[in-house]
Length: 98
Image: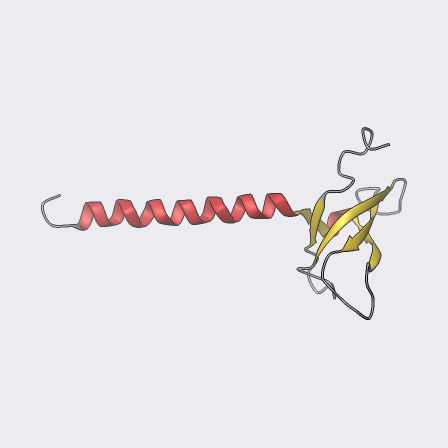
């Protein structure tokens, strides 16, 4: 089954606006096809935050309400590098003698 659904065991972040778990990280445990959602998919996600009152909390989420965590990390890194390069170019072009 893992070959047919490559995002199993993938870390995701809830990104839906106003969702009570927005920003929380989870691991995809199952994919539920043929759902009445725009994507046609829902996922069963197990949250990674420690919660002694509810360890190993799982919830069914709309596939469109999550984003892959590695994608978010990549976007943040690109933003940091872009800002660094802008500052570097600005400092080189505004320093005396250039």
